[in-house]
Length: 291
Image (cartoon, rainbow, N blue to C red; front, side):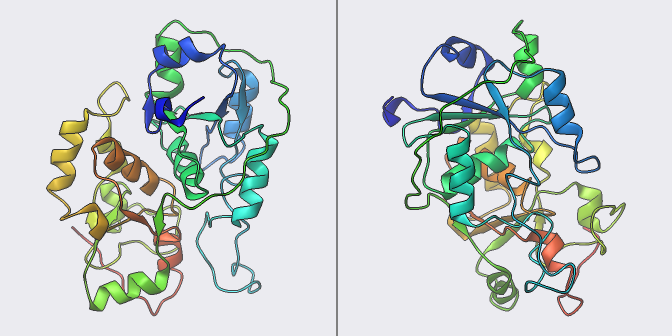
């Protein structure tokens, strides 16, 4: 497969169905429920796309939490990035090679699949796309699910130069006093305002941040809005993608905004992986509430 024909942002259910017989494709089921960490695995067991393997947000798409028990350094958020070499080994376990087309899907509008999309780009693999509309779109297209688990040969993926940009908490602190970049928070408006916070100990947002709820990237049917519409909506919030830092609660739904920006032709924004969960863990860091 040539990367010139690779899917690098979104793929429709109809397109994926046409490519199911193709060799060199790996499909990953990223379904998850933040309130019930085993919900995704259980859903996978009940039925998944043909040839799909399961990718667990907490186990496969995040590293071990640090600092929550007073050990291993400071707290880096609820879903810290794993070590790069550990993640590459996970990808090899799934049978991924340097020329593999990877497809990620979930049942939440790409909420979790976008994290895998970003992480593959993080290790230099650009042939990765999110199933537009996820599992609901697959079923609405008349496509079947299976309970069969594929058996794949171990992959040989090698890490290459990253295709992403990320920043740490120190850079976000610096941005408070020298606001050169726009912080774009992907959480729901109520959590952004500091209301109905159930996942983190403190409610609110990073001072100066703007709110772009990740679900605003979607149409009513759960598919992404057209590129031109996304471009217009993001242009109303940011100056340039290069001067934008995407964040959310723990570095997951922020990737949805980054994917939407890529679809809109606005690449280059950075991810703050620790996001609000890391930020609010230190009472010395300022917190804003309201709009």
